[in-house]
Image (cartoon, rainbow, N blue to C red; front, side, top):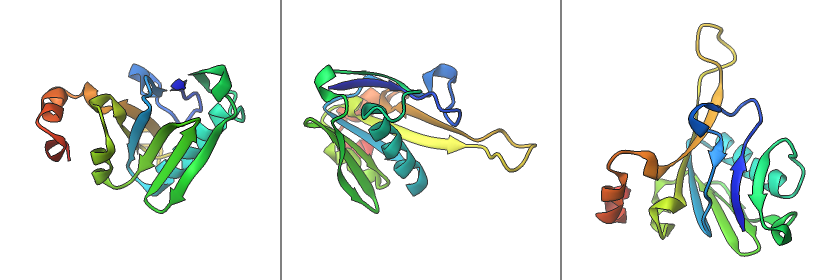
Length: 147
């Protein structure tokens, strides 16, 4: 099982562990802000587990190294399979109905630009739903409330 990835590419914001995807579950769901982010993060996860992005740090069982594959890939969703562990990246918020636990749900976003000097630099960041104050209460109230 893949337990964690620390993204080290310069595009990831490192303050407050905004580049740390940990802990992953058997059913991790990552809601992405746009198509480009979803596609690039899916490739980054695949490349990390399969040894093509050695600049990232990750914690994974030995038998899972090199076993990541794209199980499903279409416009609104990517599903990565690592020996039965599923990591779903999606654009559609309704994907949260697939979650079994609040710890399954992550959000992936970006801000800034590299094109205008007066604006903050471009950064990508990932964070779990459970960091928000009151999120556990919302989860306990049901997936309709989360949606």
